[in-house]
Image (cartoon, rainbow, N blue to C red):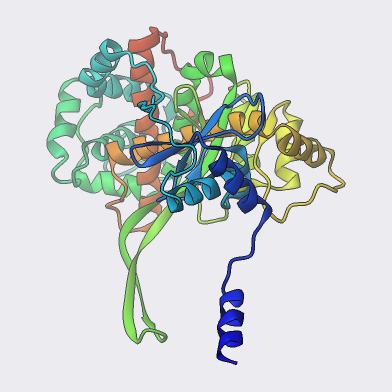
Length: 423
C-alpha cells in the first residue's frame, strides 16, 4: 500500500511533457549551447535558418526567437537551456569560447556636444520665434491695467518648466531672458502661475507642439515611421484609502497621463494629448494630426492599440499598421485590414516584428522627456498640471530641433501665416 501511494504521488507531481519541452530536450542533447556571461547561445533547430542561434536569459526568462516574441511564454530554446543546466553541460560541451557582440549604434559626438552646449540658447530663440505667432486676445473691457502679452506669458511659463525651478526661483532666469530681448518684460511669478492655470493655454501649447515638429518633417518623411504610446507623470497630490484586506492605510500619487505619437528618426512628438482616457481611442486623433504635416507610411504601437477601427484609420491614410495581435485574437474577421495584418503577423512573423520594434523609439522619447525635464509636475491644479506636461513636450521638441540643426544642418523656419488664436 505504501509503495503504491508513493508511486502515485510521484506520478501526480511529475511535469507533463510538452512539444516544446521535447524539442528543447532534443536541442540540448545535440549540443552546441554556449554560455556567455549570464546568457546562453542556443543554436536554431531549423536547418538553414536565417538566424543561426538565439540568446536566452534564464534569469529574466527571455529569448530572442520569434516564438517567444509572439507568445510571451517559455519557448523550446529556454527549455533547452534548462535541460543543459540540469545536465551540467554533459551533452555536447564545446571548448570554444566567444564573447557576445552587442549591437551598437554610431553616435555623432561632435554634433551631440555642440547641441548640448548651445541647447538652452537655441531653445530660447526657437521658443521666441514660435510665440511670435500667438495672437493676442481681444479684451472685453479695455479699461484698467494693461495685460501681460499672451506670448510673453507662455514663453515665461515654458522657460520656467525648462529650468526645473519653482516660479519664484525661476525669476532670475526669466529676467535674463527679458534682458536678451526674448520678452518685453519679465512677468511676475503669479502671472506665470495664472498662465499655467488657464484653460486657453492648453490649446495654445498643443498648437505650438504640432508646429515645433514641422521643421523635422524632411528627416522623418524619409522613413515615414511613427509610433504611439502613453506614459504618466506623478503629481503632488495623493490618493489615500483604507485597505480592508491588509488592514492598513494605503496612499499613492495621483498622475497625469500623456499620449504621444513620435517620429522614430528624430524622436520628435508629432501628436499629443493629455487625457486620462484609455490608449486605444486616442490613436485616430493623433494619427490625423500627424498626417497633416508628415508622410506617414508605418505606425507601430503595442497591443493596447489593437482594434479594427484603428487598423482601418491607419490604412485610410495609406500607412501600414504594425500592432501585434493578442493571445485571444482570431483570424476570422469582417475587417479586410484585420485579415491582411493577421496573415502577415502569422506567416511573416520576423518581418512583422522587425517593423514593430521601431516602437521602442517612443519609449526612448518618454525617457528623454522625463530624464531632462522631470517625471513629476509641480503644479497643483488639474489644468496647470496638464499645461506643465505640455510644456515639457514642447521643450523636448525644441531640443530635438537643436540636435537636428547640429547634426544635419537643417534650416528652421516657423510658418505664422495662421496665427495661434486664444480666447
